[in-house]
Amino acid sequence: MPKARKTAANPLSRYKVPILDRTLDLLELLSRHPEGLTLTTMTEALAMPKNSVFRIATTLTLRGYAERDEGTKAYRASRKLLSLGHAAVGGERLIQAAAPILTALRDATGETALLGTLAGNHGVVLDQVASSHPVKVVVEIGHAFTLHTAAPAKAMLAHWSPEAQKNFVQQMKFPKHTRHTITSATAFLAELKQARQNGYALDRGEESETFACVAAPVFDHRSHPVASIWISGPSDRVTPGSLDKLGQKVKQFADQLSRQLGYQA
Image (cartoon, rainbow, N blue to C red):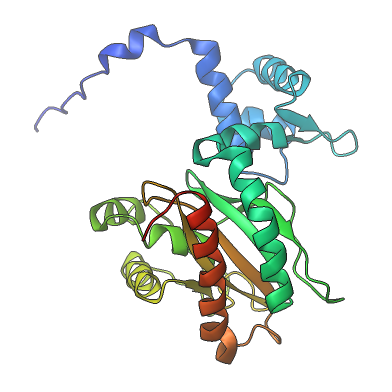
C-alpha cells in the first residue's frame, strides 16, 4: 500500500497569529450568514472554545464590525465591515457616483435599482433605490446573494478571463431553488458566455419565481468588472418578453457609471 504524501507546509505559517486567524474565521463565517448567528452556532461551526468566540464577537461589536440583536442574541456583520470590503472597488466614490444613476434607472424602468459587487463566494448589495410601485422588491444594504442565481454576479463573472472563470466555477455549488435554477458548472459557464455577448445578465426566477432581475457590469479604469447595477421586480412586471429590452436599458446606465470611473471602451 503506497504511503500518503505529505503536503508541504507554507513556510510563512510559523508567523501566523492564532487570535487573528480565529478572528478572521469568525468574520468570514458572519459574512456568509447575513441573517445572523448565535454564539452557540458560531462556536459549533468554528470548533472553537465558546469563551474565545464570545470574546472575539464582543470585541468586534465594540469596534463596530459586528452587531448583536438583543432579542435573538444573534451576531451579524455590520455596515462598517461592509465598508472595508468594498473599499477595494472605490468604496464611497463608487456609491456616490452610482447614486444618481440608480435613481435615473429606477425612474426609467419603474423597478428597484441596485448596486452590488462580489465578495468571495457570494455577492453583496451596496446600495439601492426602491421602486415607487406598491408591490416592489426591496433588500437590505449588505444583503449577501448567491452567485449561480443572481444576475449581478453573472454580469461580473462573465467578464473574467476564461481560465479564471473555469477555475472559480468548478469550485461553486449549485443548489436548486426553482425549476429555472442553473444546477451545473457547464450550464453556468454557457450562461456567462451568453451574458458577455449580450452585455447584460438575467435572473429568470432562478432564486424565486416571484421576481426577476436584469444586470449589467460596471468597469473601472483598468477595464475590470468591479460592480454591477441591476433592476429587480415582480415577475408579472419584469416578464420574459421584457428582459432583453430592459437589459439594453440597464446596460446603458451601467456604461454611464463605468465612464465615470474612468473606463474607456
